[in-house]
Amino acid sequence: MKKTKFYITTPIYYVNGAPHLGHAYTSTAADVLARWHRLEGDDVFFLTGTDEHGQKVEAAARAAGIEPQEFADRVAADFEDMAKAMNISNDDFIRTTMPRHKAACQAIWKKLQENGFIYLGAYEGWYAVRDEAFYDESETALKPDGSRYAVASGAAVEWVVEPSYFFKLSAFQDKLLEFYEANPGFIAPTAKRNEILSFVRSGLNDLSISRTSFSWGVPVPDDETHVMYVWLDALVNYLTATGYPDETAPRWGYWPASLHLVGKEIIRFHSVYWPAFLMGAGLPLPEKVFSHGWWTVEGEKMSKSLGNFIDVRPLVQEYGLDQIRYFLLREVPFGNDGDFSRDALKRRINSDLANGIGNLAQRTLSFIGKNAGAAVPPKGALQETDEALIAQAVALPEKMRATMDKLAFHEALDEAWRVIRAADGYIDAQAPWSLRKTDTDRMNSVLYTLCAVLRVLGVVLQPFMPETMGKLLDYLALSEDRSLAVLDAPLVEGTALPTPSGLFPRVVEAA
Ligand code: ME8
Image 1: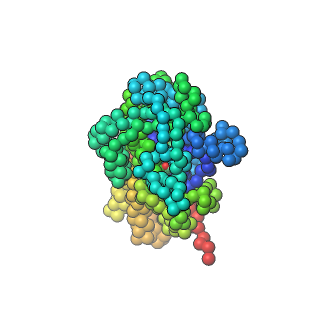
Image 2: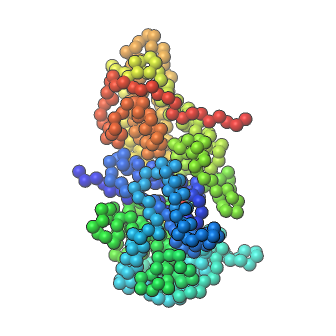
Image 3: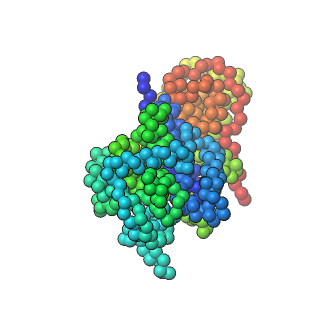
């Protein structure tokens, strides 16, 4: 059977500053989906990377007193390091300064030109370097000190007058509206979709797609006085990684992408400009763009001026990798804004992980190690209550699939925790420690049931907590294949089990 292709992307992050919690969030969410689809047996291609051109990066390099390329090399390496620290399982890491990417940008430019969608003109209007975005005056406002800023982001805007190539975005208004209509799931969540629909309905201006006042970018083919607008350059990364424009490239078949995961502030670029560029080039459109919310930290927006950007790496050192991954996806419904606080993190670790799955696994496995021969116990004759718990666990993958398909990570986890709570209730009610003295056959059936439940939990929670769930599956002596398919086979009674140790230590609250 041909495997279903699943191509998922994160935004490529600007290298003007160091990676922080927000970047780690999108990458972790994408990673969980990529791992989930691999678990399902899909053919996954997972892409992340860095956005290295443009005025903002050039200015940051200048401020650091080094050449933009050297600066980009340093910060891109830091982003790769962050991805490693978060155990992100990307299949490729694209950097927009790579030759393969420049070639892809120039190829799509030529295609758009050939198709009549590019013309030379002059741009005169507002530009926000922080957002690398052009704004209509109606999207800006004045501060009390007389300076102008973009209302949506708060970024300062400056007046730009320069020769520029334009993309005929105005020609795509109706086509885009038809496309949104025919593909209601293209922009999610719905509130964002409505926002974009009204933006497009209000009319689209042609888009400036080149700059002449600086040179840190991909040169425009046949006119090297211009560099490409950084957003055209950046969006093309999703194609570059498939080998575009080389139709014989090994990854060619992955386009169109199944899902672009983005933060809410860049939905317009992904759901208006990007599909219009692709239509202009005669290429298929991605299936979905999902925009998630923003994290604040201890109630404050993360910003340079507050100096409160959180690097996840020290948090991982302090609290554990899977603890952080779990927290990010459990704490806030995906799509909503959320607040990061150490108190909330510690609460989640202690209540859900240490006292939840950690305790359930430890109670079961160390008991088997000490009192049931350190092997998967014989099943014996299962009773109704055992069957009921196993049935609840067996139904879990399907329930999680339904929630994962709508990117409701917190609901997927909640489904798993329902099973954990049921298993906790079961172990208390069955009290294997008492059965040890009175009825070892029954004790074994209870322990077998718990092993069966733990195996399901370990398998389905791997995408969220790959390292720790890997450990749990080691303790259950599960073989190499740990995909959902393995759950169809029965547990092998008598399999020797290694000595387990705790999965999630409790975090001690500061007094
Ligand atoms: O926009 N909360 O790059 P960028 C949650 N290069 N997510 C956050 C966040 C926060 N506080 N802060 C950042 C760019 N993010 C462009 C993208 S794509 C073709 C080009 C995440 O470095 C979120 O995913 O500003 C957001 O969209 C992204 O980082 C912005 O990263």
